[in-house]
Image (cartoon, rainbow, N blue to C red; front, side):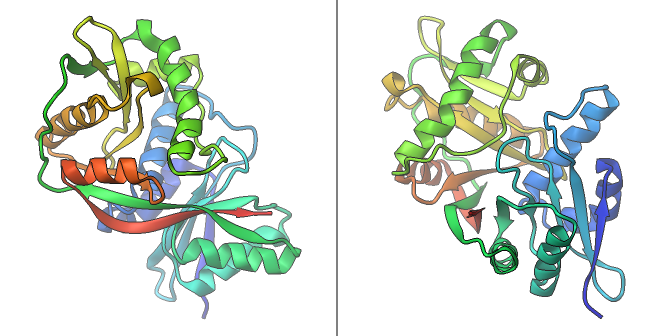
Length: 297
């Protein structure tokens, strides 16, 4: 009997169904667990999701009913790629066929290898499209934190009065990160608006480096821990402020707070970006698994 696909519309139902799988690999599951947990909290607070297309969650069950794969389609940015955790190849092909059969057009798929390439290849076969790996990303976990030599100033949580500055930096992150990796295509990622950024500031999920004059010169995002794992990102320093150690010092400071709270700390890098990969290696981050963002065209 092939693996069974179960689609869910409610994030809380998904967390209940996939709890054992997510808990068994909390670092590898950080995006799915963290995003879904946030959506549960926002729904409880009456906050509407920032996406105008239907969302779904997926669990894959084997013959015994054990969950052996999972994924979600919640991305609020084009081409609205599902994010998939590892699953049997037969299940990945079945997922592509199921989505095609119900008229859901995939413009891309992100997450675990080889699952995302299997889904993309089967979708391309069904539609006559082509696919390509747009970005190869690497997930790292912090081992022993190596404190860098800090530049003048201090790391601190961002303030509500800085929301407009942080929004402009967040918008610039995708473009500048792609350029550092030698790409002309901006990194696709979640957009923030004034209200969502204020919420993140209020919950302490945005850190800045304040220089000796009291000016914010860098920001790092931090996710709330899910299954004991917190994720750093995005990490951004404006071009005219780079090379002064702000990114490393801020990431180290935020990581130290998370470690002291008992959390494990992880982050993603673009494998093509030598600057960020070298920085995080110096801080003590070690590779866990490679993933990919695939476009279907």
